Length: 151
Image (cartoon, rainbow, N blue to C red; front, top):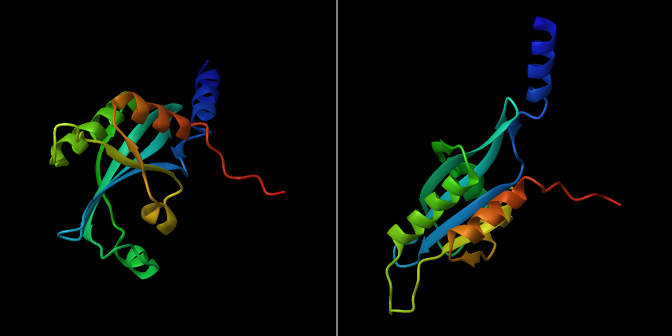
């Protein structure tokens, strides 16, 4: 019986680790040159997926260059959420807390990108997601993403 339990645990751990794909939300303040990033990293531990949250605020002039990325990209590990919905709610709450409406129709949104965490992803123009459902859907897609197949 102990052998069976060990076999089950070993099998659950086969896919343990962090996904190579992340969700990146970046709020940019061009008046102060401050960029605030929130990275959602899907992780699997003992066969259970959860979502690590990492944050970083730094000074960026127009775009991030390779030297700045290599030297200064050191996000803080903030927390972990058990569900994708909780991670999406965190991003939407962050958007609401950072939002300064210019008019009544100006709503908070999450400037959102998905992919491998590279300099290109950080500088990529983001999608603008305005609700938790859309954010949840995009984070869920990360679980199904795989690296491109070379032909």
